[in-house]
Length: 358
Image 1: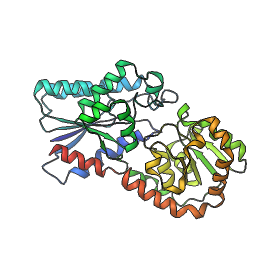
Image 2: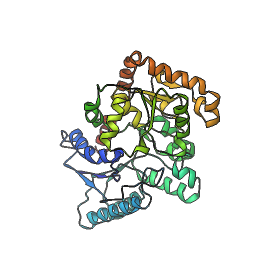
Image 3: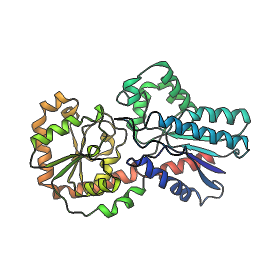
C-alpha cells in the first residue's frame, strides 16, 4: 500500500518548509521495516506559492487555495487513472484542507477503502486564531470544520490543550470520534540546530513569534524600554533567513512569550535546544509542556493592563534569568528532554498510522 502525504505549503521562514524536506523520509524510515504496512510514501504537493504570508497570519489566504486546488486535481487524477487502492492511507499535514471532503466523496462512491489522517493546527474554534477572530462562529465555517473532522479516520493534535480547546466547540464530534494526541513529527530539529549549540551567549532576549495581536508584542517592546541593559529583538521585524535566525537563537540567553494563543510552540523548543531560557506564561499548551522553572503566572500578561500591574515582577524575573543564566542550564536540559520525547517526536504519530493501516 501507499501512504500519500497531502502536505502544507512551504514558507521558507516557517517550519512548513522543514516538514516538506524531512517528513517523507521520516515516515518512510518509520514504516519501511514492516512489509505488511508500506510499499512507498508519495507526496501530493500543490506547487509553488507566494512566500509572503497575509500580515499576521500563518499562510497566504489566496495562495493557500491555489495550492489546495492543485492538490485536489492530482488526487482526482490518481483516482481516474486507477492508482488509488484499498488500504492506501492519506495523511494531511494540515487538517484544515477542504479537499478532504472531495477525497472522501471519491473514495466512497468508487468503493475504494482508504483511511485518512489529518494534523490539526488551528481553526475557528480558537478565538485567538485568524479564523476565530475574523469569522468566529458563522455557521458555514463551523459546518465546514465538523465535516472535515468527520472525514478523517484519525484526527491528530499535538497537545492535550489543543484537544480541549477543540472540544469546547465540538463536544458531540469528539464524543463520537475520539482525537489522538501525538505531538508533531519534528525530530529533525535537534540535528538541524546542532551547529548553533554552544555558541557564546550575549545579553540578548528574543521575541520569536509572529507579529499578531494574540502574541502581544507591545509587552515585549515595553520591556525593552524598562531594561536598556539588555538587547531586545523582535525576530520578524528583522526579515531573517533561517540561518540568521538560528544564529541569533544560539547567541540569545532568553526567549520570551506573552502569547494568548499557542497550541504547541516551536520557537521556544528551538531556543531551548541551543540553551536559551524559555520564559513562558502558565497557560495554553505551555502549562502541560513546561518545567516549573520557566513558567510565570498567567495573570501577569493576560492583557496589557495586567502586564502593567505586574511589570515589576516580570522585570525582576527577567533580570534573575539573565544575571544567573548558568544556574538555569540544568533546568533547560530537563526541559529539552521533556519536549523532545513528548511533543516534538513523530514516534506516536507513526505508531498510530501503522496501527490504523493494519
